[in-house]
Image (cartoon, rainbow, N blue to C red; front, side):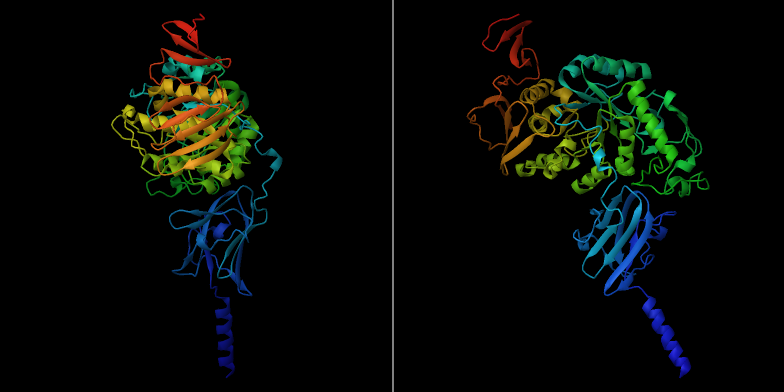
Length: 583
């Protein structure tokens, strides 16, 4: 009887020690998150008290994380059970399986609870990010009226469909570019494969686009036109000059220092340490990645002070020695936004934009993590353009993208870029369907650019669009500048139906009414003049000098605004709007 009592007691203790629920997530070696285990269904048991199941992971470092609650076998409980009301960390639905995803910009203890109904996520620091006074301190000009040009497309160092865009060729367009744009985004300037997104050396400026002397000469020429230049910065990953992670080139940043990384500064989850064909599996590695992995190259460990020092030196050198004015940061999903903020605070660029390719909530989280010391590309708006072009309702253009969150100040808006357009002469655009003969899509392209250039945010015009429709796009920008539309302009959406859209946009100097669609109202509003029009759009301005221009790709004759007055240039002579020759 005594033995039976002991067995029953042991059985009760064993049963009571079992966990009904567990947490499984993207754990990794050396990281306390999920006890270092990657998606182990019963790897991290929760403890029950009063019907609530809890687990705490201590000192979870900066990074991007995902998890679900499980029953230890075949039941996975994800984002549909996540509750904002009991959480102090932002979370998003991540991936096709609706994992609960969140980011940390500061190391902290993370507690997860589940009461059978709600999953709660709590950090000891939470979203109270450090240095809130540093928000938008650098890289984000206020009420900015500038317009950007992406001065390249994929492989445009040797393609000719829209002219090549080597430095020497861009120099021949410098006067036109400088007359129209305020910012020009250059391709990656460092030595590397292809167009430079897999860089082998940051400080070697011999790229597919030209050499260091040609680059600095072009920057100087554009500066003479009061046009600022953005460098494409690739600091998520780096390429070994031999082997997987055996030999990295030295980066010499002059007065800012010389750096040579080793495998010890590559993230522990990189393929170099796990791929069966790698020659570097046994080498020393760094800490866990603070973002998503890039399978094509070696991911830099930004938690390492040496990597941080190298990136700070690189960004300072690019601004102060080479002459750039700001940065477009590549693949910022690959590392925590806190580091982007750190590098911008160290180098103080005039302008910064982050390529964080994700949905609205994730981009907002990224901007938070970066203390709003950068703008971000408005990918959600880009996909609204895609849907509209694909035949969806004009209602898609109502309050879209970062504007819907009140974040226009931090939005770089665009229709297409090098990644979303074609990559060779015989490939079609990945999303919108435009091929190299984009003239056949004139109506849609011009309507999209009209919307882009009349709205808040910082619009980024794509080179093939500008190259094909210079006169039209210059006219849009003239109207934008005359009215003073800026990155934080107020928009009143008025009509958004299947076949029409209209809105009023307020600038520093006046207002614009934009109407789009086959069913749009074409009567001129009281107090406005029609400034320009096309098959699918009309633009009306409250500024009298922004009167209608003849739509043509031939800019001679042309109308232009100078000191707030509109002139007509024809046959080498200049006339005022009454037709009187003045010079």
